[in-house]
Amino acid sequence: MQRSRSALHAPDTTGELLRELPAPVSQAEPPSPRALLEEVRSPGAARAEVDALLSGLMRPLGPGESARERADLLHEILGDEQIRDYTGSGGRKVEHVAVLQLVELGFPYALEVPPEQYAQARAASGHHVVTRREGMNRGMGLAATTFVGALESLPMLFFALDGKPTEVSFALVWILGVALTSFVPAALAETGPVVSRDWLRTLLKVAVVLPALPWLAAAALMVVGSLLSGAFPYVLLALLPLGVGLLRLSGAKWLYGSSADQARPEPRKE
Image (cartoon, rainbow, N blue to C red):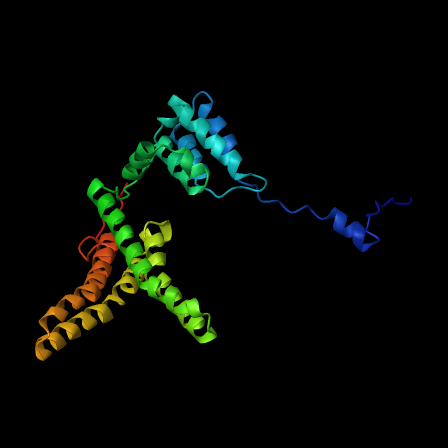
């Protein structure tokens, strides 16, 4: 009696062998903010869905997602009275997160947020809210620092009118140094990277203060020289370098505050 044996199929080629291997499991991409929003809108949505929406809104733009699309989604959330009042497990309100993320998108989307709504969102997130007095101080600091920079640059403009290469080069270097110690610190005082980094605030404050020291030293030397020589009316000439030095010191304090002012409150723990 002939026994029948079942033949096992063996792959003949490497390609056939690879086709028989199981396909690797692809990592699932996180759901889009739009999908998370629809889950929150669905009946029976719980706190977990709200937390997922908050996390999704804080993620960077996904592949193929434009800043305009994300901004429209955030505006849609802010326009939904029910959704924007939801609160996550950490106490974060959907409205506040949407406002802050809209500002994070930058220009021009940040301009679409009303100032009072932005202030409320920052306060609820534990950020430092700028008071009216602080706003006035920073405005005066901006004016003082910019005025000093223009005052220090003006003589070099007349110095370079002759057009000699040496004088022009010296004037350009001088104006560049003035810009780095006046115009640049004034322009960057309220930017996000400077506000969030104490070392950068200190560096810019020192950049504004250091050039004041030669002005104050020149004023002191002029006063001492006038007193020793008996030419007392020339003491009035010391008012110019003294004023420039004091304006720089005041501008630095108004823009970046004193050491006590820099101790900003810590973000509120949830």
